[in-house]
Length: 168
Image 1 (spheres, helix red, strand yellow):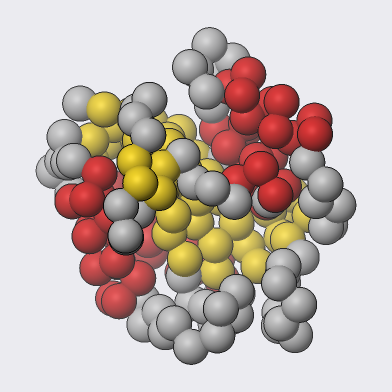
Image 2 (image 1 turned 90 degrees about the vertical axis):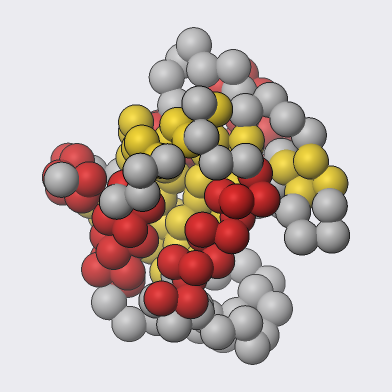
């Protein structure tokens, strides 16, 4: 089993329900065990496209899937939740990204890990730090990225203990 860190976001439809459905779909996979979920943060969209605020969370999981299989599973969940890739950095029902996959560095045409934009995204860094334990191998690196990011977009915690029941 390998530990992976995911970032999830939604800003179309019932944002909370979209996140909850994605978490439950991940957790229903025999090859995936969710070990931690951050609070839900409402966040300012990036990229200059006029759109509704996002809800974002981070998930820590253990998986026996390799990185490409995990990415394929995330794409399947996005399709199930009717994700459309119409506008770069545009609105979406759900967005699932692999932030870390163990300590691997992956650079293929379809997957780059660690996620290359995480240092520019407080909506990734803050929930990720919350979901991680302080002894996580990536914790200090994520904290350094947060301390030095140039991202000053707003975010606010919306839900916390409510997410704990999502994996049941």
